Image (cartoon, rainbow, N blue to C red; front, side):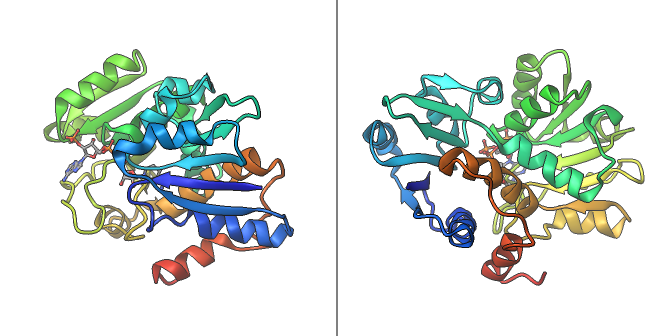
Length: 278
Ligand code: NDP
């Protein structure tokens, strides 16, 4: 069995490490490989997989929306987000698009606080790109009634609010105080604090007890999370989300559940690969 991850670039992806560790632990006759596909070849690549030996692929930047649009079938999360992080290749050559990023996000939040749930109160999401829309789709599906999107470009936040009405409201960074009042979680789904990129403005107005979560995991403890922790907030990192979405992806590709952390601790393997302390 063959599965993989497609992106451009893709060498940094931790998905091969995670999936191959699970494959080895289960003794499966399978392999999970990275596919580095230049932007202009993406559609040709996916069409070339149809009816072949590859069971499915995870999809990472910058292809999630294009991947969804190439599929014949889609789960409601992928449809709602208009983005896929998994393509399952069916034996008849058709493609089934899924999006497990939202599930990964919920796993990360619940690992931080098992009592946390979408219906406890408003949730703030920073960013208005593909990761934010997958998170909105999943959180609304899971029962969230009010989500506040804060974004550098207010127009992009407005567009998301329009798409996900009536649960989503839009805010610019200059309206952070209003956006963060009473929220139960503040989720950074922007790429602002990826290694070597820009910084977010201080977004520390959430009530004590709110969880601060960052989808970015390079670095693991972003300035956003460090500032929140220094204020006494609980934090959840992007690696928990990555592993959280990898589990259902693995089962979609190989037809068996991934083994639990007592069998193989993939988070520890990832931390080691990132040069981070556990
Ligand atoms: P997109 O390119 O679609 O969106 C980027 C977003 O970040 C936009 O809202 C953009 O704002 C904002 N942004 C970019 N630079 C800055 C900056 N300097 N200051 C403020 N805002 C900024 O990316 P994605 O939505 O696909 O991904 C976002 C992040 O989430 C990435 O870092 C990705 O690695 C991570 N991610 C992690 C996952 C995990 O499993 N842990 C899964 C999926 C994504 P504007 O609209 O103003 O341009």
